[in-house]
Image: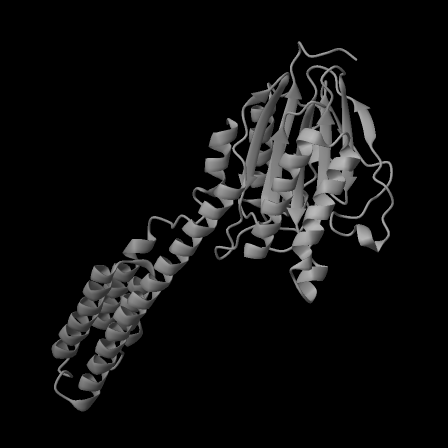
Length: 374
């Protein structure tokens, strides 16, 4: 799973759930069951409920043509049984047949309304995903001695656009990367993602250190938040982690602004890189946050850094238990960042039974074995 393929795979298949193969046959089964039940029971027993259920089921599951056929079949089956028992000419028989015909006509209307709704939702989803892809960068498979893999898994809840972001950029100070999560969803979140990534790309080139880079993002997000009003302004913050890989040292520098701690994988061990001091998210420095503290940890050849958004750790199983990547990855060895992300996605899918309820961004960076020694 290379980085570009991972991004394409995150949004594919996120629309309609796969239907069981027997569902398209359900209207036919209802008609057959209704006709048999009507035929073998008392003449005064009516299977009208089966005849009306068949076109309505087709309206929800099948095409317009199938809905029309189901409605026609229901009317013909009901008329045939009414004629067989001699009730077609009396008022009760005509009333029953009129009810089946009316429900069949309504089923056609329902089918058309559902079709138009699906078309609008599909269009909104395509637009949302196109915006997402346009904003998030296409990362190279490697920069210097670092191999890179990225994955964005979107929940695509009613075509909402998420606010997860990531970026990696080479600079005179080493490779720098960011991962973050914007408060909220929708177009306002996308605007904040665009602002944050723009500030990161500019600041990564010339900010002398990670606190300076964090200050660039802080100012840009504060300017963007000043254009809002009311609750949107108060909630327009971004949790994030900034990482730096110096070119001549096998170490890693981190600034964490209220984000889940990244994981360091090395030799089968997994370590959560908790910040030495907690810090407020970006765009909230006016609440009294002090200067950013940089955490420095060894990052030897073969080690991998896994950064992620809270969609990973907030993924829950049927019992409400959250997924914990630290014990899930402990003791395991991965050929590279691509294999790591494949394993994490497989674990989360099994843990949640495929029900992803929040957007999830994963970014993995592995130092090649020929990298600098500490």
